[in-house]
Length: 221
Image (tube, rainbow, N blue to C red; front, top):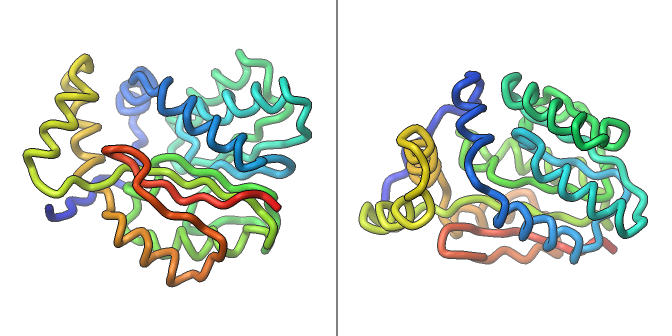
């Protein structure tokens, strides 16, 4: 199926609210569990944090385990970060989660500056994903852990319709459209593998992790 790009930044208040109200608890919890299994710790960068649901869950679990960490959580949408700030404050995690307005394609951080980089559902937003992967490779320490996950583009319209019907059936029309547009804007597993080859990040395992997701991961050394 032909890729149809969507807007790179979801930065209206209505879009941010609709996104935040969607039920991602199951997929977010699985993402955090997978990150913990890779040994995440230290200076953690969360790229495309949205409304900060994942870094909050991750921080709570790392605190429970007594692991030392600090999360820099970035997004390019003011509206998402405004909601994120409220969530982080209510969770009493402002000292451990630093929210920043940053473009994932132009990271203002030094080379090899993070012990772990995580990102959930940002790649499908990007019209020039190569720039994101170049920056990803640049800020990773050689021993750093990595967990990147996003949607897979369906092979055809029937698969697209089935995924929307399965996973967004209880959502309103705005939320269903957001999910449909995201699926159509996503990349194939082959395209993702090529992006990683181009930046030569080693030790990365890339695979289809569900009927609608791909994952790229590597353990912290």
